[in-house]
Length: 329
View 1 (tube, helix red, strand yellow):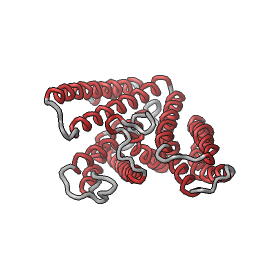
View 2 (cartoon, rainbow, N blue to C red):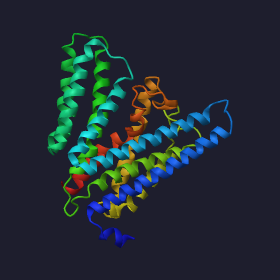
View 3 (cartoon, one colour):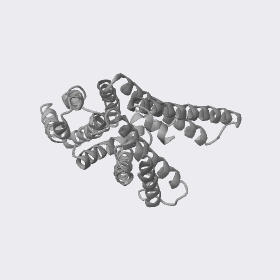
View 4 (spheres, rainbow, N blue to C red):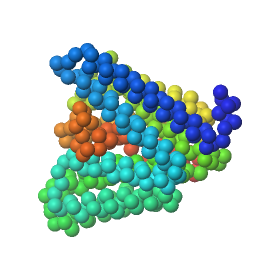
């Protein structure tokens, strides 16, 4: 099997990866349909927990389909299209983040700046591969510009809180997410045409870590921060990291990494993603929202997209810069 895969061209290898991905999603969709039919035959659940859990799983599946289609379209139509598509993803998740608390009239200029100037410029810097400026554009220049624009709105009420919320949203939803398509543009010697594997590597190890952590937490006692997350225990977190790291080592053949560096890179991504997911849960609890996608209720109508990619938004920049520094790209 390994010799067969190595005999394929880079384009054929990526195509095979998409075939496997969509095949798994088709199987998962079939299982979801069967579970839904069994749920209807089982009768009504007075607590409604089973129905809510099923709907949540269905929304997770829809989000997975959407992200898989985004990846596929981006790869099929070229890196430029992939950057544009991820720009739209950033737009929707930033919209979802901002809607957590009401805005005031004085925020309108800052919001226009964030959505229609900062976001396009950040992705334009990715497109033109200006990685040095892309790295500091939001943390330095935008961080300073947002409060200036807000101050010109002549509304001092809760000024610090309003600006901190917008700055944090831009960092997570635009800066973090923009590092995912940036991985496609890294120039590895001898790895041309296969950088899509880096994106898959990142997504698979982080999502595996989160899934194992969530499943392991069901059998454990009191979590570390029960007011924020029911699934964050030190033991379940360690299990998630171990699973993500092991998967990363096994996937080393798909990347420019050898097994031990692949293990290290996977652990870096998993630590950043899992802790970032915890932070995003804390923000949701502060805003009085437990799950944006629960029972079909979404804050913005984006089907709880931020719930599905929040760990990736934290893991992507850490992974991207770790790769660049390690390989001196």
